[in-house]
Amino acid sequence: MTRTATDASGDESARPVSHGSQTITIGNTTVEVEHQTVGLDQLKLDPDNPRLRYLVRELGHRPTPKELADLVGREDFAEDLFRQIRDNGGVLDPIHVLEDGTVVEGNTRLACLMRLRRGQPADPRWRTVPILRLPKDIPPRLVSILQGSFHVQSKNKWKAYAKAEHLHHMHTTDKMSFAAIARVLGMQERVVERLVKQFDVMTLEILPKLKGDIRRGIKLWSHVDEFFKRSDLEEYRSKQTNVKQFADLVVDGKIKGGADVRNLSKFLKSAKAKEALHKDGVKAAVAVVRRSDPTIDSQAFRRVAEAAAALKSLSLADIDRLRVETPAQDLFRELLKQLKQAARIAKFQLE
Image (cartoon, rainbow, N blue to C red; front, side):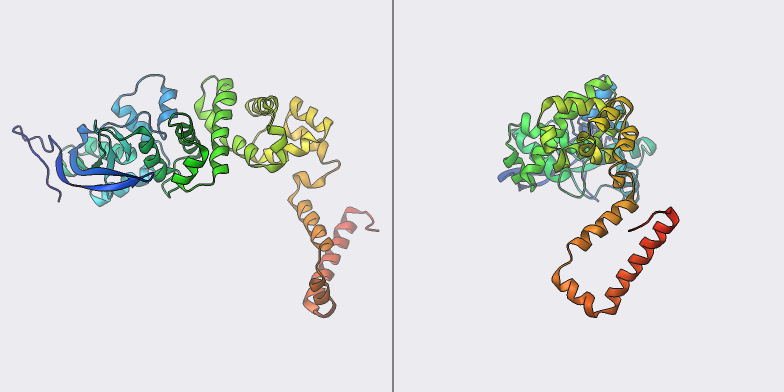
């Protein structure tokens, strides 16, 4: 069991106990950290942590430590982590802490320990925690890189919105280029740039229209994500007026789900479909497009179209196999059989 300090009053871990130091590398910079065991009261949850930042803004006031801990506890994985720490009798990995006690990595672990201590205040396991204390003069840029390395690319990732917000912070506050961020976090530069732009659209175009309803805004992240991922929308989103138009469609509920964005380019090609989208939403726009494109709302028709495209592009090698291989010929016979049957049921002539 880790040794702790006790003052004259018997208060365990009244002061940090050092266990030595080591050097770690952050962003190609060597940083000396100190291993310590400290009392929970000597640490502070960070309201500016990317995982908490948007939830804190929603509160509208400076949260108390318990409020912060409760916010952390809302995370999907928090309950599993709580049980893991409880059953293990403590945390497995030390928490990273600034010189003043602010937690920069490990807020959820600290929140779990605080909850365990509230439930079992006499249990010594929930009074202290191992930490790595960062030096007093560590640049904020290196702190951001440290957080990003744990939660942007690693298995313990933040939610998509928090991840994008952190990349945006690194770019705007820490003044790091997209290339520099990509390099230190092991990401593709174009992905970093895309996520930063997505965050801008969310915060500048969508959230203001929701009058501070951040939770609803977070649910719309998939819409923005799909909007920026699609190559067929590249030209459309290059104009800011179109981006604003897209934001209006999302906020007004005209585009219901993130998957609906995949059909946006088809709507934009048809004046009538575009008009229907703005007036009555996705369902009306789909009804217009399906008159000329039956694949827009049917997976079965999309597969038929894919099969037709595959037949058009058969290679010479496939043709040669078709000449001599009975199983290959049987595939075509079955396809023809099903085509005829569908046409017969639908009462239309194939030829």
